[in-house]
Amino acid sequence: MVAVAATTAFSAYIIKDVVNEVFDDKKLSAAYSIAGVILLVFFLKGMASFGQEVLLKRIANNMVARYQKRAFDHLLKLGVGFFSDTRSGFLVGQINRNISGVQNMLNTIITTFARDLLTLIALICVMVWQDPLMSVGSLIVMPIAAYVISRYVKKVKQLSRKEVNVNARVVSNMIETAQGIPVVKAFTMEEQLKDSLSQLIDKAEKQANTIALVNARTKPLTETLGGFAIAGAVAFGGWRVIALDGNPGALLSFLAAAMLAYDPARRIASFRVQFEKSLVNARMLYELLDTPPRQSDKPGAAPIKISGGEIEFDHVSFSYDNIDTVLRDISFTAKTGEVTALVGPSGGGKSTIINTILRFHDLQKGRILVDGQNIADVEVHGLRLKTSYVSQSPVLFEGTIADNILYGRPGASMEEVIEAAKKAQAHDFISQMPEGYDTPVGEMGSNLSGGQKQRLSIARAILRDAPILLLDEATSALDNESEKAVQFALEGLMKGRTTIVIAHRLSTIRNADKIIVIDKGVIREEGKHRALVKKPKGIYARLYRMGALDIDADPTAGAAAEKPAEARRGTRGSKAGLPAGKQTARKPAAKNGKRT
Image 1: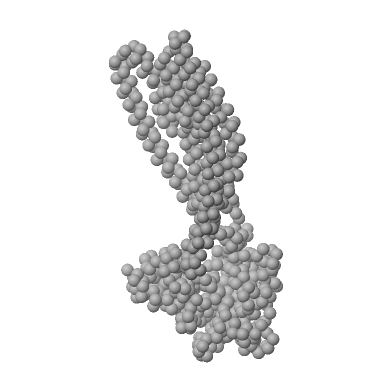
Image 2: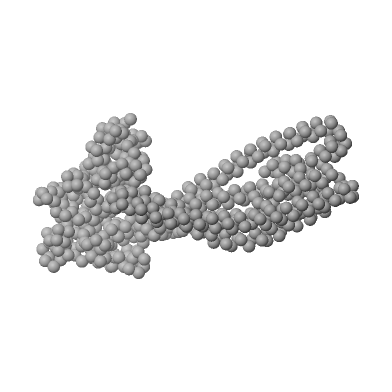
């Protein structure tokens, strides 16, 4: 930047010698010498500009990359509640817009406040050197321009925040439409969504045009003031050369420096408007980065120590918004090696119980103990490492089938991945795919059926091999035949583990060691299947009679579930565990379990 400023100033300064020695004194040798110097100066300026451009772009790109990584890292630390309150598409759009704003702020600071300022200082030095009096007259317009421009700053700040939010809503709607395209097509929602998005885009366009108008209002002023300065210098300088026999070379050098100084001076005058606009983006980005994780570890949180994984709810009450209580004074114990089934009407609080065990949310009252340790006092990451979780809606991520199973236990061998897939009844359909375990799952698993995605999520939980197993409608997306096959795998997985399962299928519930009936956040009934169905006025018996508990057409269905509950108890041995593989799965296997 210093080299660019110096060469720019020198190109104006040398005009004096060109006029005085070449045109006035008619020195041909001086013309050749000056021509050579000018060529060298412009070559150096070109090289300096090249280096400056590359350096500034690298700094800006590095800044964007660092903020993207930092934002994503911080998002992963935020609690589930944050994402429940914030639309994911809006969040992505806002982050991208604000990071671009931070990049613009960096460019503005470096190019305007550094490069332009250095160039302007160098050119002012040339002007003062050639004619101090005219320099004072020409530069007096700068504070006037700066004062007028500063009046627009507040309005630009307000408009910029609105623009970011509107554009984030546009991105959010586009993402949601793409993700829900089957529903859009099925319900012929194209026209409604097109109109809705069109209105948002029009609003975003209006905001952008308003900001452009505010920025453009400064242009007539700066151009006019610049014209006054140059015109005054030409008139006054010309009069001195003609009337007072002044130095024409000095005048032309001064005018060249003044004209070259005009653009950087104009950019510096409007610097604050551009800076404040970008500063809004930076502030909004830091509002996100400063959002504290809701489930962060307490100071001095200890690593959790699991011996069996027994879970105890001790008078637990919970509310998502601190107004409507979802769980009311819940107390029960899920013992090691036993299956505890949560049953009840929808919205009763069953999934909330699972979520609080995983510390997706913190409690308002009571305690949850794992092997006698309050989960509020242990490290969250360690707690979740000891838990296998299968949600009702299976979630897959960008990558291959093997990649998604490996999320259960990164670093597991390919043999363990295949074994987990076999236990989840997924190996057969994986082997039939052209690329086997290397098959990309697509966005959110779009290349797979619902049942296939569910089996992969179960395989991921099997590979986790954790002492605590949480199943939230784990087989809800499977047909009866697949559900029966997976049930055998789950029965084996449950051995020696503390299992809490939310289910509506009787084959999953009937032989649970304990059934807890939850309604409106309260435990209404507790016991085993045979005892609960005999209560004529009980909720469980009513659900059973109404068919709310899905009963397989085959009365012998769920053979695994008919086994005595005691058969599931024991320790996690060779049958429940996975064979230790020698080779870490770096490259997922192809068909039939063979590595490619």
